[in-house]
Amino acid sequence: MTKFNFSFVERKIRKKTFGILTTLNSDESPHTTGILYGVSKPDAEFALYLLTSKKYKKIRNIQDNPKISFIIPFPHHHFRFVPSGTITLNGVAKLVPVNTENIIEIFSEKRILKMIIADIDLEKDEEYVFIKIEPDQKILCYGVGFNILKLRGSHTEGGYFVTIPTEK
Image (tube, rainbow, N blue to C red; front, top):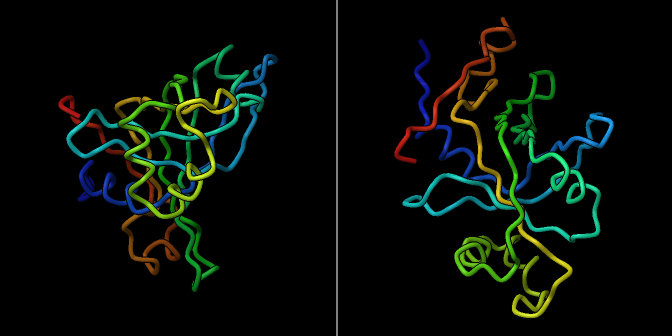
């Protein structure tokens, strides 16, 4: 039994803004790209939101197959000999218009995300779209919240999962 729960993992996810999105190409090979993200409001259904141009391959892939994987890395900047922690969300992606008010609010709350939307005419621009990630209930984690010395001694001990509560 792990001492970590969804609330702990959710706080970790909310502190970050960068993750790695994997979509599936038409031949089912993976297509992976780094991207910034925002998180739904705490009182709303738990989801992640990404902003991107419609011209990118990830959009075509999502239109063909909405199954995705999204990994949030937690590197140890001072202790490079310790494996990075990760949080992995698998689920489905949906395309949402760029002028969606509640998502714009989410992006307005963090400086780096605010800078991204600053140059876009959110009312008229048709080049951009939000990707909404609706994660499966099970979130896979590795090393997040663990003592790094414990991980160094036994790296296999760092894996666990949490479940998103049904009310989220």
